[in-house]
Image 1 (cartoon, helix red, strand yellow):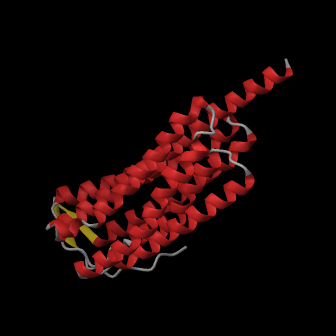
Image 2 (cartoon, rainbow, N blue to C red):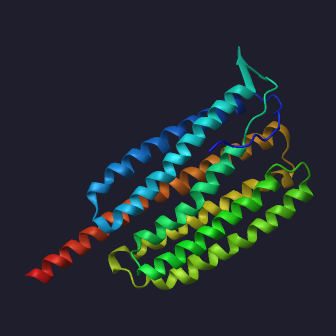
Image 3 (cartoon, rainbow, N blue to C red):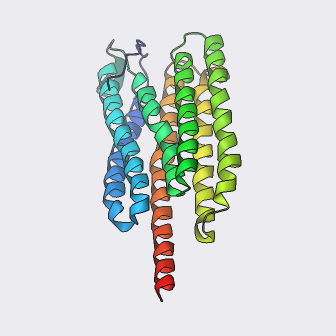
Length: 264
């Protein structure tokens, strides 16, 4: 899915700022790709009931790896780094790749969390649908503010995006909270950690989103935003993916032991 270009030609920045973003994007691409391989090969380590959760978790990191590769290409095209000096080439840096990525991956992140809990079919469909739609709406509403030229417009769309985000938080700590108590005691704390990790990493996005409101501008604001979103993506996708894998492995072991006990 091709991203629509965001026509913002970045200002020249210091070599440190350029390389910090350059290396963080490169590292994140590699981390996402490695996580994809790990999660998909890890399917053989879990019971069939949890393999879909790992497939989706790996799909999240695979989509992110592709978009980080495109972000890396766009970053290289936007700047010329020669003899320790960075200059703008005049090409626009396409940050819309992030929003295309989030539109696809953010709903899937919530769905994989629901799937690994192995709720009833009706409850799984209901929660996955509600959370997925709210997540997509949150991303869609945030995008106009990201490309807005004025802080007022950015604040308006940021506020609108916060509405579905608040609903997601409510569902995570209320609706899923009750469902977590039905999980095996051995995995409850892990699922709570996954829920908290999701909330904490997603809570970091609006902080970065509001960077222009604290006096940051130009290359400094651009660097903070790129690094902030990159760190949040690593935690939300790779970090959650590994937790989902651990939960799936542990629940598979518990169910296997229960099956052996029942046969004895």
